[in-house]
Image (cartoon, rainbow, N blue to C red):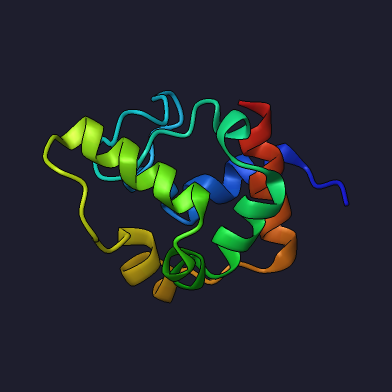
Length: 114
């Protein structure tokens, strides 16, 4: 399935993704709140991002390798000893922002273009 990255860029703004994620920051920078998205295609598969955008709470609860990587990067950036924590997107945003499959594909294509 091919989506339009320009539609994804528009959705990134409309869905207020930039409030928490900066597209110019690398994934090692958690500012203002969540990881930067530059190079996301090198850290996660499209399939994982698809699942994440569809149901971040379920993916976070699964505590797979990608979630563990996010958590490890978070504590390296913020300092402190890694421990269980809640994902902002999985708890707050994931309940308020519901994306269609088409919107998810457009966002993925936009992120992969970065």
